[in-house]
Length: 286
Image 1 (cartoon, one colour):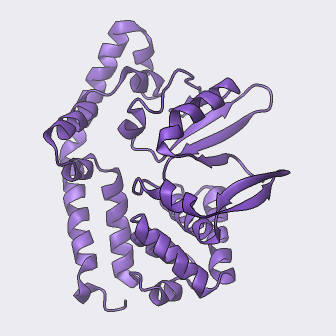
Image 2 (cartoon, rainbow, N blue to C red):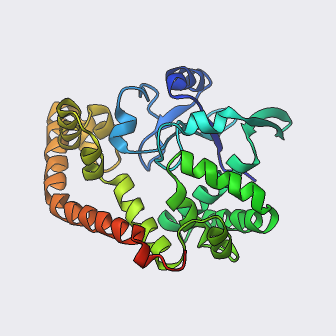
Image 3 (cartoon, rainbow, N blue to C red):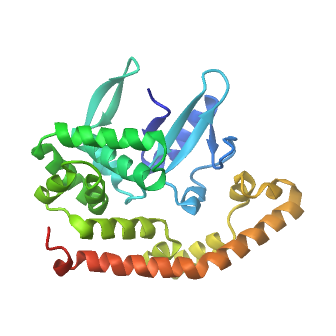
């Protein structure tokens, strides 16, 4: 059975996909209380503000359901759509013929999905299902298919994530070695470091070269949009008029300042670990 539907669209089609979903009774959800926010525009910067790779839409009325609207996979680079949509297959799903990635692309999705759930939700049943999917893919797909998957991973900057995912299942370590990916301690170190760097505002700041872009990132970190605060279950006061919104902004700013030193240290450690994992002397098992 499926708990949701994952739909990927090109970046330029986000607004249209949002309108279609809202017209059919779905609304984007940005908090744990599963209350949709139909007015949320996924192209207005909130997506980047949250650092998500997908926005979840929920419909409670009629035929209830969940749709995860993707423009990328696991916070990888922006060219994921171009790579996955370059060659596609047709697959029967729920009685309809749909366009899906080719087998190699599906194998990459399975690997990244397993890593995501193993790291962020290790105790949830879905994490076990995601790992079982990866076990089956490793056991059932031949080396030629996985080589194509590795090439796809390299083209979207997900080689380290693929190596880290393969470490999670039996036979994956040997497969990673045959694919020329990081293995052993180096793979674990690089995966942990990458996961920290992917969600770090400091990493995004370091990768932004123009002054205007850096100022925008800092401003978003210190003063997020009203939509985000009013939709977030952690700041219910933000929904109680201007005074409540001002209190929520003060709480947010205090949290950001309080966490800044530890976040900076974690980012520095992650960068150092990434360099160490890339050092040939630390990857003798490769």
